[in-house]
Image 1 (tube, rainbow, N blue to C red):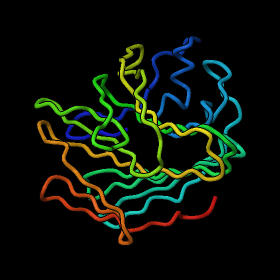
Image 2 (image 1 turned 180 degrees about the vertical axis):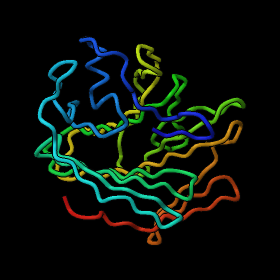
Image 3 (image 1 turned 45 degrees about the vertical axis):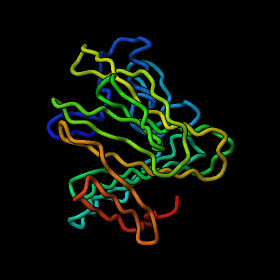
Length: 231
């Protein structure tokens, strides 16, 4: 879940109800969440409205905070023998970096989902791979862009529950890569903007790390990072 300037921008589906139905099955699926999905499957098998299949092994590196960057790394084997790991960086209280890697692929499809809170989502232009909530004077906006990974951006229908029994339509960004073997790596950036603020930013990667310029005055550096441990 990502909220910015008092508004949810990337959402968790929640629970619409507990009755057996296609919508209940969807709400319990990995595809209903902002996460990695391999071959359209869920990390845990759906048995029925109240029952899951075998629980995967999960791990985490714990939380790290050096005052400028807060980070956490976690992973699972829910698509065994394939393994997935995600690192989330919150940079100087301004934006998020999401690093994903998937190991043990043998010609698989890898999709990375981000669920927006609204339906008026647009695919990014100007060479960016991603999607955005457009700028308005009333509400904050957000851009989700893949910086590395070479995926195809797709916008698809989705839903989330504002409260029990209340479903709201929304859109999800799907970063799709097909026929992947070996290791897959992706890096995405999530930048929120205040109401009326132009979505003006530039990103540069070199030996010093990742430099992010937002507008004309904001400059941030994310140093090169190694994964916490091999999976």
